Image 1 (tube, rainbow, N blue to C red):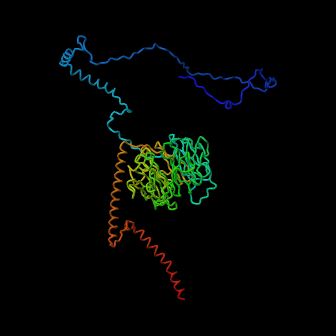
Image 2 (cartoon, rainbow, N blue to C red; image 1 turned 45 degrees about the horizontal axis):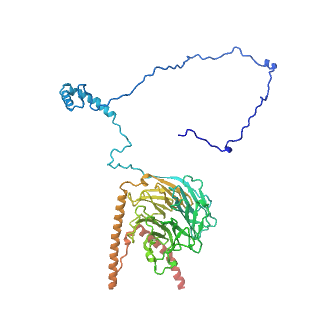
Image 3 (cartoon, one colour; image 1 turned 180 degrees about the vertical axis):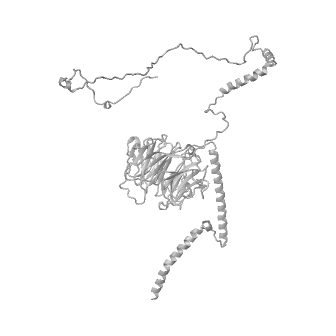
Length: 576
């Protein structure tokens, strides 16, 4: 074991060097005595001096002879036996026990000894509070209140505010974050905005670790899950870039405009491959392209999201891809969220567009703002759009299995918890982050956190489960930490969640089958030529509100009272 430690310090931190020399004393000033000043002084007579008159106490120390104590004990295995009794002889010990038990004083003596013995036993009755004595009994979990707190705030380093468009955690246990900023408003002037993307260290929210300088604004930026120094980016001009942080802040390769996209690249994700260098991107021009970062001069594969005519696809009829979803455990499956509110499921194994585009879900009334599979149950995925969040199953194409109520503010993004599989997060345009646990309740969020006054645009969960990075409209990232009951699963959560997904999927299948039968009956009647009055899928009585009806009647009467004189004047003018 080393007992020395060397303190190292730079020469520049020592200060100015001290220079010493050998020389005699220097007389700075001398004031000689002057007898003329003697008569100006008054002598004090008598002179009083104070002395200590109280009792003096002194401290005395004395060392006495030290007594030496030794702890010794005796192990009573067979108790105390007389010398004439052999402990190893069972007959002698039994004979002596019978002799003692027949004694008259035996019972009285035993009662007296029991009190003292009980006191001694209770003194040794210690319990280890950290030891689990009853391992077969499940401990009752402590009821912990749902809570959240903001750990760090990472602000954009430029004066002109830029909305957060993407956040990506690094693969080295999430010690860094890659963020990109871009204003995607229609016909917005972004010429004065900075194009730089930032790499943040989680422990240092003051200054970014690295500044990336692309040629055009980056909309998406993703870390390679196998290499912490490699990133891919999608840009507003339709190009795709590759970055190596070891080689500086410039991209090492970019696609040419001819093989890129016509519209901005909204999403880019890495896919499972032997080399670990393949990824795919989606754009609002209706194309999805697969790339190999070692060969960006042309894509590996191109898919047009035109489902109107799979035999003859036209890019002008294709859906606009704004969200991509990929699960590493299913290497050939992928999903695309479109600007038209559809979710398109695909399989890369297919050779024709009919085989590649396997399904379509009518998800939302507006663009699909968020799309993510459940980390434990890959068949179930979460989508966010318009004012609601929905949970889907791949086995049910016509409707979702769970959904939230419509919010007053629009939802902007969503994410599953990677450690507690029943929890998911949604961000809203009013700056609120909602946390949902479908095992606790489905109608209302478990906790709603007001992060800021601006709209939240992006959310990404840390792989450990407790931290969540949330981006805002003004380019600020908030690192939020949640309580353990929202971050870690209990023993029965997996079984309960499996049963819930299976039950809801079965229910939706039954409803889909019923609707299918009704449609077939209506079709059969129409073929026979019967006149069929189609019943509306919704009843207008559901939305009847007497207050609304009164307000509409008042509104129409007001309009009539205003328009009536105008109409009469026009008639008179025509008659004359």
